[in-house]
Image (cartoon, rainbow, N blue to C red; front, side, top):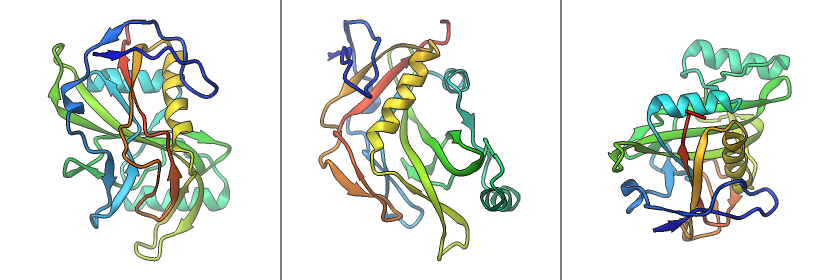
Amino acid sequence: MVMWSASQAEDTPSGTQEGTIDGHPALINSPTHTTTSSGHIGDAINVAFIGSEKELHHMLSASGWYAADPITSKTSFRIAADVVLRKPYPHAPVSNLYLWGRKQDAAFEQPVGNSPKQRHHVRFWQSHKVDSNSKPLWLGAATYDERVELSRTTGRITHKIAPNIDQERNKLVNDAIAAGKLHGYYWVEQFHQLAKGKNGGGDPYFTDRRLAVGVIDIRR
């Protein structure tokens, strides 16, 4: 049994009730990091939600997040142009990362300012295992893109992430709480072995090593 979080520290999600909840079976031996297409370690997994695909999309939309467009030559050109011209692109594509042998099943973002140069964003992968309510687990990697660079390998615009990935995890959960779309959430302590690392682009990050797991409730 895992205790519902009652923490109300600064920048951590708050507003949940006390109680207990069984852990999702997909959390057993769950991967803790994504990988790049070349097999290098990518972004760290730091958030998860339990619910159907429809519920996940509803929750994120209600929380002020936009579904990312797929990567095509058209969308790649547009994000590059909009960064240069400082034009908004709330559905800008995100690069592919991999978990369980496949690229993300869904990606969402929240723009910052009038350009896709900076944004909050998260990628999700749906588990094959379901819980006693037949609900899958959506493992996510939430990060904040603070600037862009031109990739020397692909020639495409690539983002560089801010190091505090816990802040992005907490923001995402807090947004869902504020929208009234979570039944509650709990922490998986020491989900990560290390408190510091680097992603596939060489961007450093740090974490308190915890995974936040939210239970979606779109009836609210």
